[in-house]
Length: 336
Image (cartoon, rainbow, N blue to C red):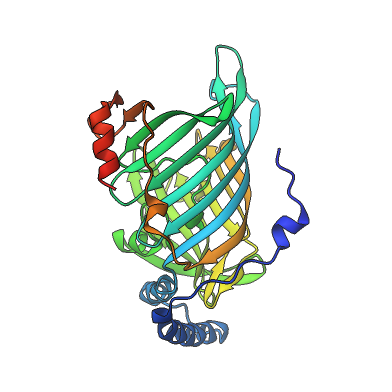
């Protein structure tokens, strides 16, 4: 297990290389944020969802890209139905842009399940996603200096938690896109990490004999997402059950108007029936360090060249994992 020292959590984060074209936008954004937060603190009625969306847009306007180092412990229940919980160390170096490009180098341990047991194996993966295809290289588990295979896919896969899941940028969908897909409302305020935040819920969806929903906690003053909970229940009159939780904490203002978490946790649970206790499924507990906002990035950051004589699997839609020919691999390399 990774042992996290106090210095990992408190070390000074790097200051951003701010783009000149953003300075005026940031001044306006901070002024609007101040007005919105003043209204909230004054005890006025709850803001409507449109005010929340405008606040999200203000934060979005301040972020062109993010870089961060992640350390985590992944916990996973025995997939074969046992009660044992396995723990694996994970580390990842991330670069992510607001328009969805990604690069990471992930290392740590992964589980291999066998007939009656499971073992942990070391792994190393590098991935680049330029907005068209995800390209990745997997290293040999017994020799992390040697490349084992490559893969091309429609979407990136992850070995740890995508950091933007704890920000307004989100994952495949941004927070703003989520709120615009169906009807959401601000339903109240609550205290989270010693701060007053807004509680936002969507219209319940009924499917398969269950009701489903999403609850979002949003810090209006800071303009940041702090928690997302996925909800379920069997009867409409019952209380919602949080069966999955994504939550950031220990937020710091890394760049003017941009608050980002230094810690996070993600848990998923199994819920068999409405009144039964939840059973742990899997989760992560981790830290973020050395956040950098809006650094100047080379185009090559999101490119990955497949070396010669490395087998590359095609996991794009309809390809079914077939091995690419050398000519196809060379064509992929030229497309970058």
